[in-house]
Length: 396
Ligand code: TTP
Ligand code: MG
Image 1 (cartoon, protein in one colour):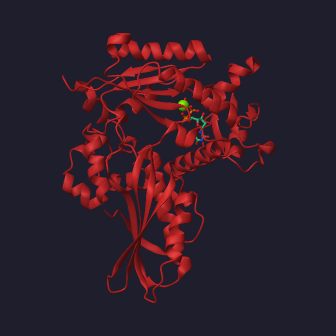
Image 2 (cartoon, rainbow, N blue to C red; image 1 turned 90 degrees about the vertical axis):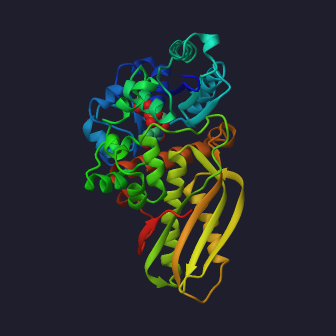
Image 3 (tube, helix red, strand yellow; image 1 turned 90 degrees about the horizontal axis):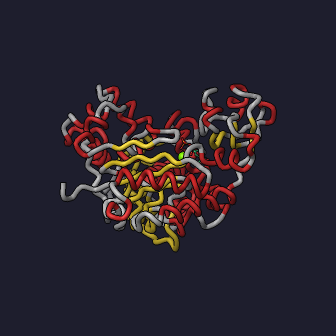
């Protein structure tokens, strides 16, 4: 096919743990857990990651470290060494740059590569992926798994399914057969709550979602409905190397009763900022522009916008500015609805975030851990402030 694209997703196996095993051969083949201090089972933090030997015991990223300790007290527990992982990450990105200029970083240990135009240099797309794996192994002594597919989402699922030390190719003609049997929450950005809602409508697999009417999904899920429907049909036309589409991500909440309780309003805004920033991270994006929307009693609607010096997807940064905008907005009227919108979206960029410094790295990793917990256990697990609002939906 003329417009066929070949997207590879490269993701390191058990990244932090693998680096530690490489640097201390006594750890090779053993359960190694990177994360908070377990304090003999009384530790309060979480697991960052663990070696595949530790996964046999049921240990996973974002699990409370006390549970990990209970499951495998004899494991080797190590604190994360973020500057070291950042150095290795830089080295890996350096290797990837040899294969294509078209790289989209997706995290400290993963990236998408558009290798459509690289085949004449390295053989078929499959050969290129094999070479990527080999080169990473020979230069870093670490193992990457690689998925190859016509879309980013399928490539990411393929690399994940192939782990550890895997490679899986999904051809264009097999794309829907590959996607449709998978549970619906394999779709990017589709979290636990949406999954539960969809399951209650009998939508269990990606195929179930794809077979529903697009408008029906729009009614169920707002603008996300159409986004998820397109992904379920294997449509993800965003160009890897181009800028993200000129679009925005937003969420809004209508209070059960109009309110002028600023603590309630700020709690609602914080929750919206967390949702919006979670979506940004799920889509590998950062935002430069932040907009607050306030609808007062009587349906008068106001927006306030500010542009950041540096794009972000951190919820606390977005909330800090939304709070500023809210506090500078004065009205004696009660508030009916608030919304948070981010725009000026950019793909997550190496210089812009991951390698800025250890603090940013830690933050990125904490946010990722929080997203993972929310995905697994729902929002109820992590909440910072009480929220007395009801409906939440996207605004355009
Ligand atoms: P992942 O690629 O999700 O996990 P992984 O590389 O450890 O294991 P896998 O073989 O399944 O890919 O994340 C990359 C690193 O990011 C991971 O080594 C540690 C860090 N991380 C956290 O700190 N907290 C988290 O909740 C997750 C998911 C990852
Ligand atoms: Mg990984």
